Image 1 (cartoon, rainbow, N blue to C red):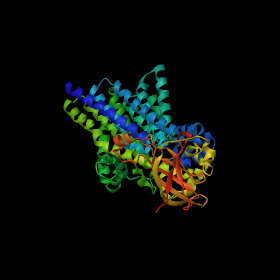
Image 2: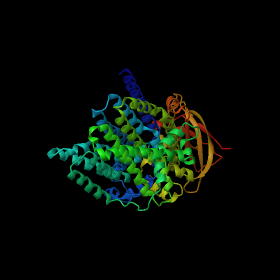
Image 3: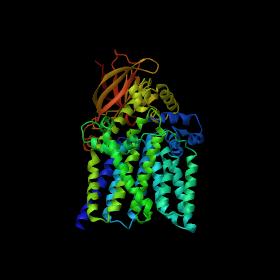
Image 4: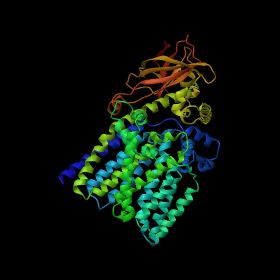
Length: 565
């Protein structure tokens, strides 16, 4: 008993540490500007009514419910990505909570098993290997709506075995949850075969099974899956990638480099994962007694739902030249929860076997330590991506031409025309990075913008012209990189570039982060006071200066811009 109490304490501490670090890393690495697919998606919104935008398919996905969230964000928050991030984060919490409810209600397993299951669930949901999805408000709303809908359906599905009036409420909730999952992202269609299998194992009445079949068939009509066969090796790699990512993170290079160079480990662990899937599913097909343990039910639901989601990913990419993109880290969102489900099934099945359960418990306790290097490295990578995106957004505010790599950070390489079309739509509607109106300052005298709102800030620093670029009208421009800090120790967030006559020639932005957070969470590997800005109509014969403008107050001090070498 004392040993199990120690295990429970260790599990609780591990849950707290992983949850806190996961939330902090997600917040600090979140996307703060429009990115990737959403430039084109927003352009569709601009040219269609809200109803048309909601019912249209995007990249063969129905995004009805996420589209409603994004349209609300555009209307009420001017395209700010922060509300979408917090909605996505809330959906992550809701998903984990809904999946934990039946586990903690389960009276057939011990408190230690429940503690270990909670640890696995938190690691599976908040591991930064999933940050390609979870750090993006838009992507996270799509995918977490699918998982939240699935978790809600799993919670109420066992109650459909009731008869009479007690059946109506859970039946309606399950159907609604299935529709939310299906019409939030293409992979959500996997909810229907998952519910059918679970309903079979629960021995639901025939009319309930028939209702699930009818709902699934009705949903499938919306989607057209590509008929070509897909390579089974890619399924192995999709399943095994989270494991190999966690292993490779112990090496000095970025784990994604090893994923491409050494795919055999992902393939091997994927084979093991599918073998464990068979061991988890086949006995239940025969016994059909899954109602005895809600812990095992939750684990099986996660395993089946996420493996079917991965099958849909492969089916959707079958025959495409970009099939290798299926190994991108964005699919860790699904495969990480596949392994979470396998762990839950394992905990449930060994809980009554003293010798075996200690082996499983030790493995589960070691899990956070095993994946933490990948957790931290992925967080560092995501923070750097966020910083690069914010710097590129400053280029758009200053109307300078971005190079191919910068466009690739915010969108896709090789699509400059489509990218700038979407940018102009955002600028006209004053959305996202244009909502604050910094672009309106350029060309105006600082006195006309700030009036008498000036005070000493103790601004210090250094900066230099790092590169010469072009404005959108072909005029010369300069990219300025430097470091700045105030006398109070704070880092200025927004700065302006001025010429000797006081005309604002450009805007700059800094990557502000607390030195303490940098040391604790990122081991001091981030620049805490760097800023990047641009000078339009740049003349190397003129001496330019940089002033801070936080809270609408212009600093009296000025940092001189040194010419580049």
